[in-house]
Structure formats: structure tokens, C-alpha cells
Amino acid sequence: MDNSQITTPLSKEQAYALVDAVSEQEELTLAASAYEDKNGNWMFEATCEGKPDVEAFNRIAARTLNGKVTFSIEKIDPDIDWIAKSLEGLPPVAAGGFIVHAGHNGDQLPPELIPIHIEAAQAFGTGHHQTTAGCLEAIFGILKSKRPKKVLDVGTGTGVLAIALAKRLKRKIVASDIDPIAVKTTKDNARLNKVKKWIKPVLATGLNSKKIRKRGRYNLIVANILAGPLADLAPDIAAASKKNADIILSGILNTQAAKVIAAYENNGIVLNRRIVLKEWTTLVMQKI
Image (cartoon, helix red, strand yellow):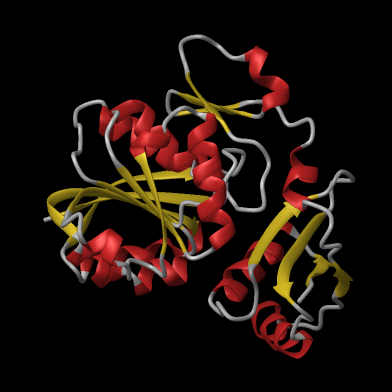
């Protein structure tokens, strides 16, 4: 089944409000985003599996924006790797002592930063997004004083966070994702970054995998997904965490942070630090 994109021009505030509302309906989209185009206009964009449910988008837009919105729909060419296309020409991105780069700019790297080579691929997570950058900042902060023995990356995408952890810790990192393409991409990128022996890619829905459970409880769990699934996973992440474990949560719009914090506080996990990059929040929490 081919995917499609549904878009509409809005103000910046409206675009992010609609992303927030649509993200609560997990079955509606594969991904939703707000961005400023090359002409300075703000756009709402969502990628859907098959044809989008336009009626559902209209209902959410009417409720969220108090008005009617006209959406444009475009079928996505399955033969084009849209992430690769979007990354063409992007410069390396430095965050938290790491620098994420593609092959075409590998000769531009400052020697004091740890390089992470991520080629464009059909899975989310390149380092150019604020959620990934926030996680890298959080990882850097935690690893200044700790060396967690058991580490889990939930929703690994391209494996960028697992690779960062493996390069710093030189020990086994379990990297899980619900998407088989992401699992394969993580495996390929681990090989590319010469950390294949440290990374265990796992296909799993949330934490529901024997390969995750057999490692016991974790000292560090990183989850960069969406606010709704993060809140739903709070009991499972709490159960999988050792006492005093560090928990890094991202993929959260600033307006969604309170809901996620409350879900984790209800499961014995408290907030230590909040990293805000533009409209996105990364939470650094701890199991008590």
C-alpha cells in the first residue's frame, strides 16, 4: 500500500497545535510535522498509510483551530527515498559532544567531537531534528558522571542514539523498534560506525520482547517516539528500570510535556532536567 501526504498552510502556532492534536490519534498518521517552507510560510504535514482519512483530519482541525481548513493530498512515490532526498546537502549537526554526519560531509568534522555516520534511510532519526539533538544532549550530561551497565533504546529509528551510547560506553546496547526497516537500518548503521558488536537490534512493540526482558532491568532507558505512546509506556518503562535508573524521553512537543511527566510520576519516575529546543522537549527523569 502506497503512502500519501496531507498538507495545509497555517500560522506557526496553528501548525504546531494541529500536530499536537493529530499526534494523539496514533492510527491516523505515520508521522506529523510543522515546518517553515523556503518562502517563509508555515505548513502542517502528515504522512499516512494509504489514503488519509480526510474527514477525521477535518474534525480535528475544526475542533483545534475553530475553523475550516483546506487540505491538499499527494501520493508519495514509493520509488523515492524521501528522507534521503530531504537530507541532500544538509551540514553535519553537533549535539552533546557528538557530531552526526552523512558520507558526503565526513571530511568537515571537528576532531574533538565523537562522529556518528548516519546515511539517509527509510527510518526516522538523523540528528537534524530537535528531538534527536535533545537526546544527545541528555546522554552527554548523564555520561559525564555515570557508566550505565544495561542500556535500552526504545524506538531506535536509524540507531543514532544507540550508536552514540555504544561509542561512549563500549558495551551492549539493546536497540528496539516496531518497524522492520528501522531494525535493518540500525544494524547497517552500527556496522558503518564500527559498533556492530555493541548493538543488539530488536524488532518489538514497545518493550514487549523476550530479547528485551532477558537483559533484566536497565540502568538507562532512552525513548524518542511520540508523546501518546510514551505516556502509555510509562508502566512498562518503570517496570523495566532499576532503582535510580535514568530515563530519557523525547518526541514531545512543549505543550505535551506535562501529560508525559504526570504519567511517569504516577509510576515512580521523577523529573531531573528538561531540555527545550524550539517547540520540542526532552525529559531527563529518574526511577526512585
